Image (tube, rainbow, N blue to C red; front, side, top):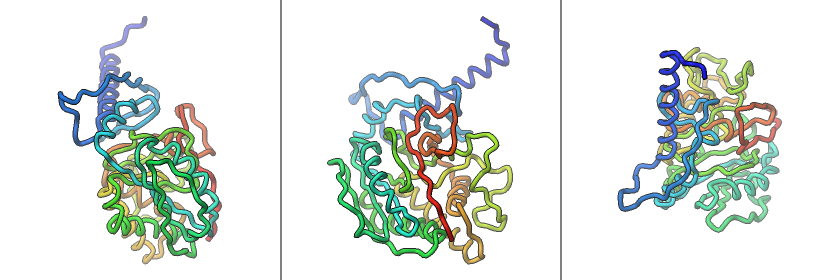
Length: 318
C-alpha cells in the first residue's frame, strides 16, 4: 500500500484518538459507574464513523448511527431507575391536533422503548383527544392551555409554559425532559443514547451545502443575535432536552429573551429557535444528536444512514 508521511500518520492517529474518546464518552454518560462487584456483560464495540464529525471542539459527543452500543447504555440506564419526560404542544388553530395520533403512536413505540416515559401533551382542545393506547411503562398526561391568537405567541409562550411547569410539577415527576414538536413521525428507535445533562439536535439544514440558514438572526439588536463567525452548530428547536434542571435554565432564559424582544418590537419566523441557539452558544450542550434525530424531508444526504424522526410540514400564517 501507499506509504503515509509523518504528518499524515500524525493526523490519522489524532483522528482515531478523537473517535475513541467520543465513543468512550457516549458509552459512559451517567454519574455513577458499576464497581468491580457489578461487572457489565460484554457487548460488541460500536463501529467507527470516519465520514462524519463525532466530537465537538469542546469534547461533547455527536451521536450518529454506529457510534454507540445501546445494550451497554440500557444496562447502565436500568440501574438508575430513571423516568424521562416528553413535552409536546398541539394547537387546533394551526392544525397541530391532526398530528397527535401519529406522533403518540410512533413515540410510544420508538421513544426509549422498554423504559418509563411520561408524555405531557399541552393542547387548547383537550376534549378532542381520543383514547390512546400506551405501553405499560408509559403514561400520557393531557394538559389544557390557552389558545394564543398568533403562532408567534404560541412559540414564545411555549418556553414560558415549560419553565413554569418544570418548577411546579415536572421536577417532581421526571429526571430528564425532552421537548419534541408534535408534527413528526418517529421511524426508528430513539434510546438512552440521547440522555445527558444538556442535549441539542443539529439542524438537518446544516449538513447540506449551500442551503439557506432558516433561523439566522436578522436583527442585530435582538437578544438572540449571534455575532458573525461566533456560532458553533445550528440547532433545531424541534428536539432538545436534558436534565430537568438544565432544561429549566434554558427555557427560563429563552422565555426572558423572547419577552424582551417583543417589548422592543422584534419577532418573526423561527424566533424561539434563534433564542435556543443563542443560549446554547453560551452554555455548550454536553451531547449533540446528529440530524438523524430530526430530519427535514425536503433534504437528502448520504451521511444519514437512518432517519429516526422526520418532520411533517405545517403552513403558518400571521
